[in-house]
Image (cartoon, rainbow, N blue to C red; front, side, top):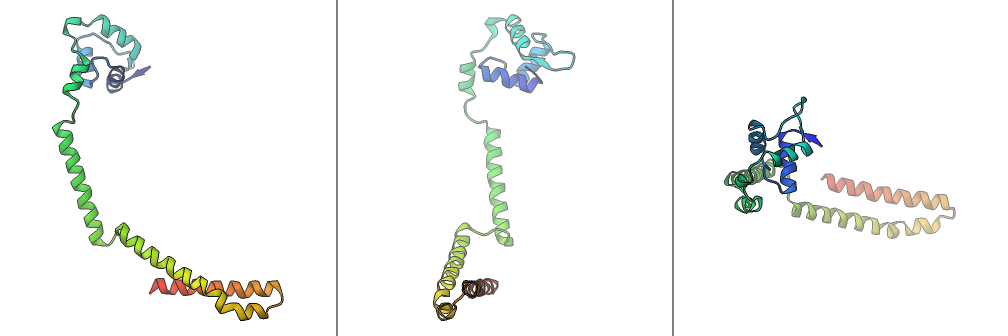
Length: 163
């Protein structure tokens, strides 16, 4: 596999090898422990072999010990996370104040009211149309009466929601 310095550093990190940062890869290139190809990309297998061959074992840090020292997020990462959280909170409040965002509880309440109203309107249809349906003898006429009743109920719901 071939890639740039960042990709090669990620490759080394994934394998648990030292040199898992872009700076370490840059330093290895500067000191000629590894080389890039004519296209400027690093051949991972060749670079791994070259790194091992050209590195003084006495100067290699234990990767696991280094990882323990760096295990927590850096102060910069913590500050960035806090800033991101504050920004999102401020944006959410601004959208609420502008009326561009509603709370889930408010949406659930309105939705519940709409469903309740729709249910009541639709359940009244049999009572409202019982006499007309009983007087109808032909299925197409029953269907027409029923469809008209449903459309009236839905139109009534639409008017109530618009108000």
